[in-house]
Image 1 (tube, rainbow, N blue to C red):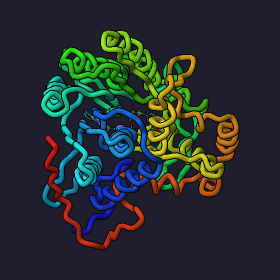
Image 2 (cartoon, helix red, strand yellow):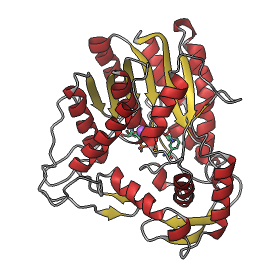
Image 3 (cartoon, rainbow, N blue to C red):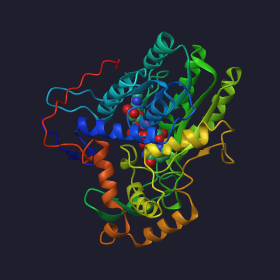
Length: 396
Ligand code: NAI
Ligand code: NA
């Protein structure tokens, strides 16, 4: 079958298996080009199929020779219908890992459930004994809490007052003003229930109680801060409250892991085009201006560059892990540099439908977005007939 991108709103309904495989291969080649990282050897990645989680799995496996277990929630292919990109990414990851004799198994299911946690524990016991790194990289709009059975939905809204600012529809390039009404009180608790630290803590407690965490095990989850222009809708909005909760949970987890000398970190990462971030209003306009600025300054990074730097220059240097005053690892340091932020806020003032193609990297945004689904990837023959049904032997 010939597979083309089919857009609906902000999502793409199709994915290209060969393009996804090439993306994974490019990330592996990048990690290998940067040399060996003296990191963890047995790694669990929760949210392992796309974005920062996939980059964490690739960096662990191909930077440190780690055995990896990946957890994700992806659609397998069906006759005449492609899988979701994370499925193809994981199939490709498995193929390349097994070519190099690296252990890799995956569980496709709801990471918020008790069942998936138990499956992972059983798999660790059976195959690895213990893990020494747990990466927590879920991004989801919904979570069913297994304890109360309630399904919570997150919202992306400001708190207290209406937020009005510019935004862009990155498909059409149209810049317009958007107003987002403030959230209701329950939106805050719901968003914290989905994207806060509760499930991370449940994972770490379950793993610890089962004895599958190695001495001095480390866990890391990902957060975001960003600039003033997005503050009202991001860091000081509902999602920011969830990130505050996630960051506070790191200290609770570290306390709970005291007996095994374990440690929980939050790493603040750079704004990047992923399926999660493209759904947030205002962020795509900021990203297109940020990309333009960072590319001009030679500072641009994607997920794999960010995570390779996180592992090699923060987590596994052999020295103490550097953190900010709030105990967070900062790998958003280049994004937050004064000269970068000053440039972006100047461009923000000038941004309009007419100016954006020149002052912003709208083309780079669109390309990254298409590439998330395996399209427009160099060296892929999109006219060739492909088999969209790829069996993955190690996906449970
Ligand atoms: P993503 O959408 O690329 O990845 C999400 C992952 O979670 C996928 O592997 C998906 O399969 C998995 N997932 C979602 N729901 C699941 C469920 N119920 N059970 C099992 N797996 C599930 O997202 P991205 O951007 O990599 O986000 C990961 C983390 O990084 C999030 O905490 C996000 O807030 C954070 N972050 C993202 C930034 C960005 O600009 N994209 C910037 C800084 C932090
Ligand atoms: Na991820």
